[in-house]
Length: 290
Image (tube, rainbow, N blue to C red; front, side, top):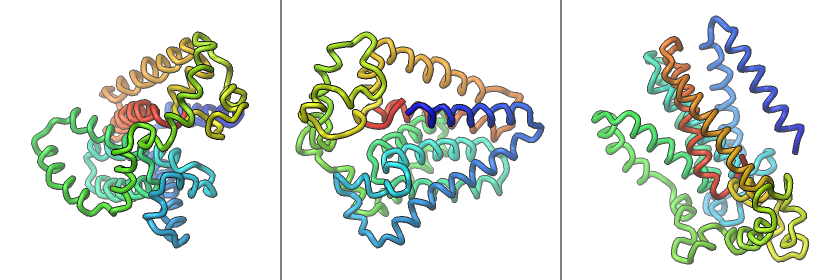
C-alpha cells in the first residue's frame, strides 16, 4: 500500500532526471514504445492462448479474468488508454514519416488490447482522449478523416464489445454500474458522513461498518477514485489531490507541450500525457484510484 507507490514515484523521478540531463531525449521514446508493445501483447497473447470466447469476457463479473497477469482488467484498460493518448499526440506532432507509420501500428495494438479488457471506464477514457484531440486540432482534414474511419471501426467491432457497452442500460444506474451503486457506494455514504472533512485513513473501506457487518460487497476498494479519496482523506484530501493532479501536474504538462525549445515528439508526449491524465481523472468516477 505504501512502498509500491513510492517505488513508482522514485522510478519516475529517476527517469525525469535522466531526461533532463540527456542530450538525445528522443532515445527515451524507444523503451517507452517497447514497454507499450510488451504490455499490450501480454493481454492479446494471454486471451488468444486461453481459448476463452469474447462473449464470456464481456460478462459483468469477468473483469478478474486477466488478474493472473498481475493487474485487474480495469487497471490494464486505463493503462492502455493513457498509452494511446501518448501515441496519438506524438503521431500528430512528429514530422518523421517512418515514426508516424510505426505509431499508427502501435495505436492499433494498444487499442486492441484496451478493447479486450472490456473495461467501460477505459473505453470512456479512450473516447475522452479522442474528443480532446479533435477539439484541440479542429482541422477540416482531421474531421473528415474521422468521419470516414470511425463508422468503419464501429462496424468491425465484435458484438461482444457492443454487448458489454450496452450492459444494464435499460435496467437503471445500479445495473449500469455492475451493482456498485447499491452494493458499494450507497452503503458507504453513512461512513463518509461520519468524517467528511478529513476522512478515516487509507483503505478505510476495510473497517467501515458496512464491510464489517456484511451489508456491502466484499471488495478492497470503493470502485470509485473520487469516493475513495473522500472516504479516506475527506473533503480536504480530495481538494488537495485534485489540486495536485489538475492544478500542478496537468497544467505543467500543458505548459511543457507549448515549450518551443522541445522536439516535436517530446511536445506531443507532454500534450498526450495531459490528455491522458484528464481522461483518467474523469473516468475514475467509476473505478481505479488517485
